[in-house]
Length: 107
Image (cartoon, rainbow, N blue to C red):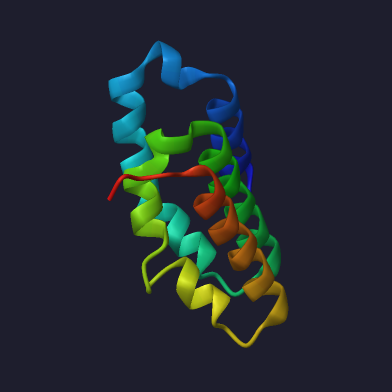
């Protein structure tokens, strides 16, 4: 939980303007650890991971595109949205909506 809060602080601190190339690599490296947290069975962790993904999507916009594609895969957010647990599905749904609303791709 503390590490996800630290990620949120880094994203909101406008680090991307200071270190754009390093930050892009940082986003890609975060995909696997955050995906694991999204698939966790504890709702508090899933909620924090969903909030972190939502914050990255809304703050970074199109810069978040490569990572967003990976989060929207069948093995991450879509799997959570289709889960039987209403709390987990709701958190996943909010993250998916944040990505769709804020990340626009010409693809």
